[in-house]
Image 1 (cartoon, one colour):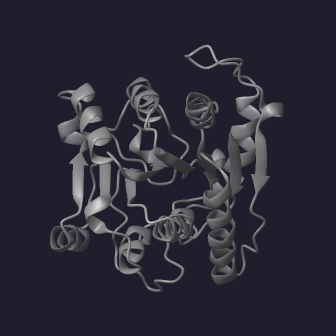
Image 2 (tube, rainbow, N blue to C red; image 1 turned 180 degrees about the vertical axis):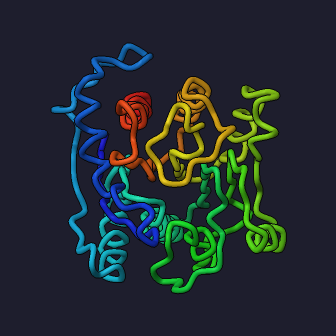
Length: 268
């Protein structure tokens, strides 16, 4: 399993601290001896990389993330990317899209997020963490193959964009009625498609994941989300996962960092 640290932030200063999450999550992973499938977790045996970027040159940073991600999709079966804030997902998913086009495969994107991230971008080439989905669609990612799960706070302009583009949502208010059935729905959505999963840690209730900038109450419990991950990791066409918006500087008793490490361990 390849783990790649991507320490980019572009969140209008509100996500400062997220660039350090990768190191904290990997250090916490060292304290997990086995996952819930009793698979041994040995950090030394994992393939660890970092995309070294210039945080002061966002355009070049995004180009570098794209270039490295494209090569990874060509050479690795499954990869976990550790952000960073959600702006990293734009260039990674753009590379995923182009990889799928080259291989004549159909791309699919599952996003776990409390927010839609569909605000109109100031610069489509370097969108912020609130704009990346809008920009990704503008660059040609098939909108019918995007599913946003766990959303519970959507800005009015985003609602219009979502409606116009017929982007599929599973709102948090619909999930807890039947978590198993929702999981089946997500897995059916990915059927016969190359799949990428993007996890914004704020999809989880801040009672379980306080270390993030945009806290939204009423999210998943850590147990519920771990169940989802344990199911979704079985998707045979799953090529990549990112975990973003973990902010160690805002965390309490390392709850969010430990949850990030737990998610990684269950994906291994």
